[in-house]
Length: 253
Image (cartoon, rainbow, N blue to C red; front, top):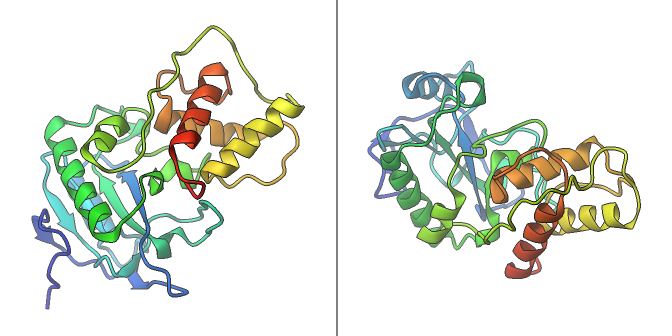
């Protein structure tokens, strides 16, 4: 028997076998957005509902705005992989995942159509309202898996989503001419950058100098909150935008 959809915005429920109970008593308090990275929404749906794939997501939004649910929100879907945010390593157990159909960077990375964005907005607002998900916990796959994932990428309109009522946004500081911090840099300014990234939620240890992990987190931050230049370097614009964002969020982000 097909379950009832959790959201009124669902067009079709197409069950995936790839799920399990959430672990450790965790409940969804994080919303994670992906792109499919496949050439068609139909192919993505087939993959996400195939026993062989061992992956799934709660929802898929195709380019025409149709919303398919695959896993009940109360269950743990398999979408985040190895990931971390704000001290939590089991992102699958604390999140609801939405796949937004877009071929992604490997296949030309087209813009997200307006009709698709409208459907994503409505679905996200519904989810964050019902589960009381804080704005700072509406995230990109690239945020929780920096360096490993780049979705939904720098073309996704996070400002539009936040304006609709899902997620956090601040006006990015304009990009300047400074090159900022990068690989090999050390010192108090690098430590301050890493501290800010950790406070936001990124999984950085006490790294010391500006290493690959730091650059990956900077790039992930830029893809989400400072999209005009995504280069993994912590210029003045990145610093200012990151500080401004932290100031708007509760201490727990």
